[in-house]
Image (cartoon, rainbow, N blue to C red; front, side, top):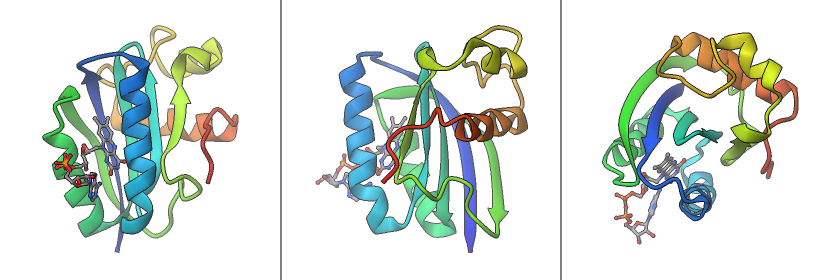
Length: 140
Ligand code: FAD
């Protein structure tokens, strides 16, 4: 049973070293639990999609909720799926500051990552477009 979970949060410390540490941790542990996904970061905000077995995703989300490196964690979308969309990444990365402004404006009032201001469906559409435009790095 596969599920996809999407959430947003605000970084406590926007230091790039912290983001790198989170990505390294994700890429180390996700393969053993069969989790794949995308982590978007920009303007102090995280947008992360997690895919995998229901138990594995739910357990990881429980850890993520308690992680002191971020706050204001909000669940945007959760669904049972028959296939993965982000299966090529143990944890793909998108640096929003490098994303084409028009792509961000397509889905939001301003050219910035603000999943708090849009629906979960819109944030998911943005992630899919980022994938289609090869904005995601870290394929393994
Ligand atoms: P800790 O108390 O930090 O670690 C206990 C022990 O478990 C340590 O020895 C450590 O090396 C080991 N350990 C660390 N992580 C894991 C793990 N996932 N599974 C098994 N053992 C572990 N973590 C991910 O694994 N995948 C992600 O995709 C992911 N995305 C994140 C996104 C954001 C925005 C943030 C802030 C954090 C993310 N994390 C992710 C980290 C996650 O929040 C936890 O730090 C991690 O799951 C470890 O849990 P813990 O803090 O309870 O364990």
